[in-house]
Image (cartoon, rainbow, N blue to C red; front, side, top):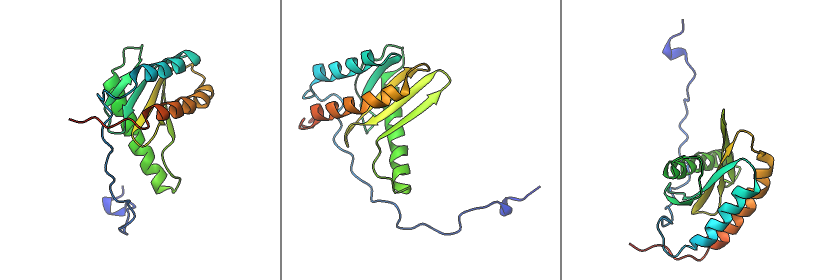
Length: 161
């Protein structure tokens, strides 16, 4: 039986390796300047284009819901928060490995998938799919949808409180 002192551990501090904290952009949630009909059209097109997609969530990197078209009873607010958590983890992985900015992450569970795509520095596209979804096809089409969403979001004035 080994003692706790025998377990491996970091012995050297890694000071100065973290990037400076960045300020979060102004939240997109509830912004009346957003082109909601055009956003809804993009989310619906992706859902209809890929069989097995239950729906999409557009959320901010702050974890707040902007809009969604979920059809499976999942809580869209929870999924927006999970997408932001996935983004945060992916961002740190990219930084630590020197691989650049977060682009996409997919989580596979027994009953389906959650894929999160970076739209821009402010927003994320989360796609919920069944276990039978063609993930390669999703990865082919979702980045194009994310790029179109980025164009729709560019130039939108931040909501003022």
